[in-house]
Image (cartoon, rainbow, N blue to C red; front, top):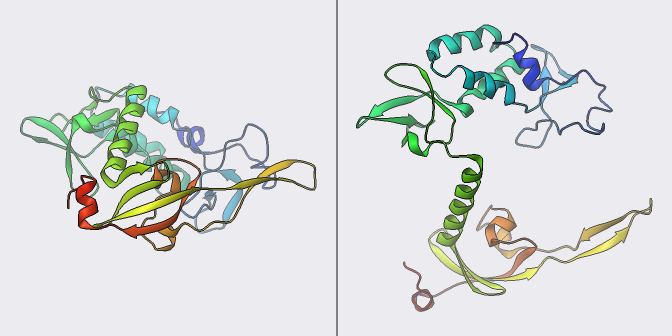
Amino acid sequence: MRKDMSKVIVERPRVGHSDSRSRPGRSRPLEDEDGVPLRAREPNGPPRKTKWLNENLAPLKRYLAAQAGRPWNKVYSEISAHLKPSSTVQQHVRDHIEDIVAVRTRMRGGKVVTIGRYGAEAPLESDWRRLFVHPRTGLLRRNPHRPAIGQLARLGREARARALAERMVEVGPDTQLHLFGQDWFEVRLAPIRSRERTRANGLRELVVKPYVDVVKRAGLSDLPLAELYGREGVYAIDKRQISKAEKKRFGIAG
């Protein structure tokens, strides 16, 4: 494993704080859950303004793929020799290993299963990671069941469509039925309006007119609007819980 793997993957060249985000061709810095840019930190010191964490995992993926057939303990020892957990940047690289390799596995009924974060088991056939550690031999192996990128995208679209169909029914161009918790609601939609505005510098921009989504206001869902309603550019202007007779009429169980 190359000694500068952590630099290749996650460290940018040194740049000034003021131009680190504005130069053409630079990717957006990695952000935390609050949208705050993550930066490499000195041990027990303030964030450095000269290096940004980046998400270029291709070198790590290529390295791990090239190790297929080798004992995982030896591969991991080589990784650990170059990527120290005491370094924030290098630990960041180590954290991505299990995004690529199914390390925690066991045999179940003569087949390899993977073990999730909370102990749940899943067949290797359903695991999207490209590599796994065989629980008996300890060898790093390629996952023969991993679908191609195009197939992954198709499977993702199909899964999202199934999830949407389980909680939402279209009954008209601006009316949907939604399952929130244990109850079904009729939701009426309206388009989100916008207008063009000319800025002081002469550029024109679209400005979204204020609106209130009644589903969001009631705290019934935390999904983004486009995902909630299965389309872009609409919001809920009215909602009401439907009766058992209406559920029967629409073929809704429960």
